Image (tube, rainbow, N blue to C red; front, side):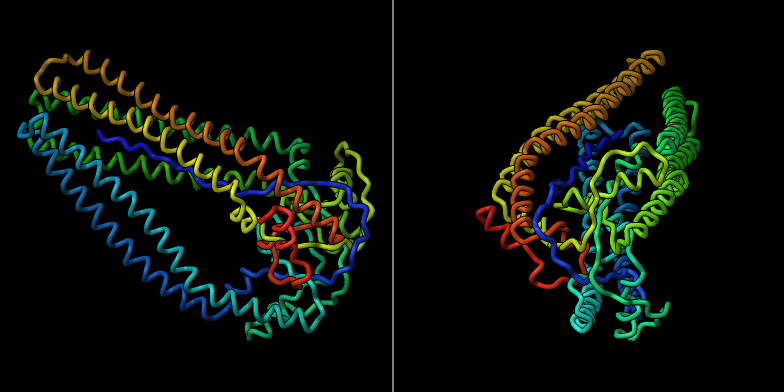
Length: 489
């Protein structure tokens, strides 16, 4: 049996939210919004791009399938030789190592396919995004709009006044069918933000949904475990029957096919379980999200707001723009305190990823993370290598008839325990990496937030948002360079 030690660690680039009281005078701004992704998707050129991407994907996938088929054919031939007793223990170990190398090559190719598809997708779609953005710039200039938000960015803008929607204007300029009449009236915008995480934590429905989801997930896991345990017992039974000479070569081949089919069924079960879990999560939480969004909309209209941001996208925000406690009251929850005063709050824009990438401290932290990841990975790989050697040693004893069925069962239990230890190590490793990432990056994020705060105060901005939710902004609203100067970059 071949095991692969997988690492799935992603680089961390994030920014913390810093909420402070802003006493300086706010600056009125005109603003608008539309869903950038939806407009691009409606462009006729997207169909051609999708076809080209599909053709490219098929070429890459076909190559991968050829690699898998070749691997399977070689594995089947080796198993036949092994069962016929034509493979020495040394040759068996060498072949297993070769198979492990080829398996890793397949896994690496799968990653390469994902990367190539992403590059190709960007290559095909970026010109379309650029065209929409250029058109948006023209519309904004003509209408005197200082900011255009992208409401297709998930969980960024929780409420937007329809009177500030310029989707129809942009669509008509691009020659795309207009789905709704132009409702843009524009003008200066009153802004606020809300902490939806705090709202979710107080809603009793959330705990019930969490419990229901956990129970559903455990049911799926139990089903997979039962099927896996059953397959392992089946494999042990077949191995013992082969050793006792109870199966002909044809029967052995039939059992191998049956075993592989059950393996595929378990893999499909795992894949289906993930989709079932996603569907279950959506069915449980969608009504809760709708309830919160409705309450936010009611409060926004009561307070004559045009935009309500999720607090998580605010790199800086004034306390007097926080309407969380008002939404709590609307939901019938025990509300906290607040001092929302409204006003035409000025919004500043910055590129947090660009700032982080330019900070030398980030590079040092990433180097430390890479070194720790490599160290922990080598330790985990050593555990896997030892387990593989133990499998070979036990198989050799079985081939020589040195283990009784009872002893084989005990060895199987021992090997299963070692497998579980490796899985636990993977989880512990992930937890350790996360903790170190936080320890190393938190001081850097604190330093960045301080620079954002001070710059916002100097520029008179009540809110600072990241550039990733902005389609267009007036150059004067971009405070990235002043922040850099405060950081000494």
